[in-house]
Image (cartoon, rainbow, N blue to C red):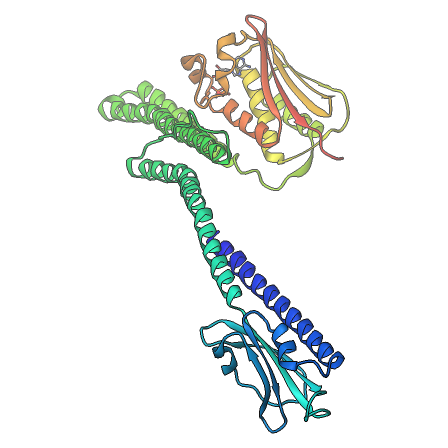
Length: 438
Ligand code: ADP
């Protein structure tokens, strides 16, 4: 603002100065021409009086001969005649500096003298005017511009300071909160009450959302680590207690030896599965390059594998021969595997598997006729390590990670995994995936 004001006011000052000077030059040139005309018209009139009549208010008129002598010289004040004058046959208009710093407009013009002895001689007519009034005007203008600049700068400065404080304060608060969070390992948020709804408010709100998101994630990770270590501790302590039992009484007791070996083997399997599933859960976050996968053939293959391994009835209903989705084949196979495996684990009757198309979605459903899932448990079964009946789930080799893995894979494929269930009737798990280009 300061630079702008200085620039504008300096321009005003010099523009005004130039216009005034040009104006003065023009006026004095015009007046000089009139003097020349009058001298030509009245060669016999009393020349000194004629020149006096046209004398500029703060100036001088001089007629210089070729030999440098002043033929005529008229001035309102003696000091005005101190201006140097030379004989010249060219016309000129110039501004020179006066004694007191004022500008002096000087017009020089060669003319033919008509009167007296020197009639017919070429002489130089020099007319000058000291712009004393102009000097005062310029000084007044300077004062006005300086005062106006100050008047403009004061509110600008106040407004600028206020605005910068208004803008900088929230940013400072944000930095302070971030520093505190880092130093004290906290999840502190910014107070956004009574704030105007501007971009800074948006930034603070986003910061608060980010803090919520990070805290949620962090807490989930902590729960995951504690759950995982707890889950791993159980088989390890079982293995350890069997090993101690064998140490004490196993060598002479073949029955106990057999039981211990079986238990250790099954717990080792369980631990292996748990570790594999935890790795799968971590890996599922980064889906590799998406490929076109025919869901129908994938379901047929997986169903056939289960039918071969278990002597259970698995019915497959398919609405088409081919249905392509974009995804990772191994991960999609894993979902199908988890859902059919659960249906077989948690029911004793037949299992129905179906694939159909609905609103440009592939819909894969696995229905069992088991005990069903209580309503309050339906959302929780997708959480990591959550099992409705821990003891029963343990018998069936469950880890509580299967559905969490399935849900993550579904999400990574822009799909959705849900469940409907009737107590005593059975449950249906529904996987929806957007259909890809064939
Ligand atoms: P798990 O390894 O224990 O099977 P999941 O994440 O696959 O872990 O399942 C979580 C829990 O949801 C299971 O422990 C079980 O209690 C319940 N569940 C899963 N599928 C079914 C089903 N088809 N019928 C009844 N309950 C089920």
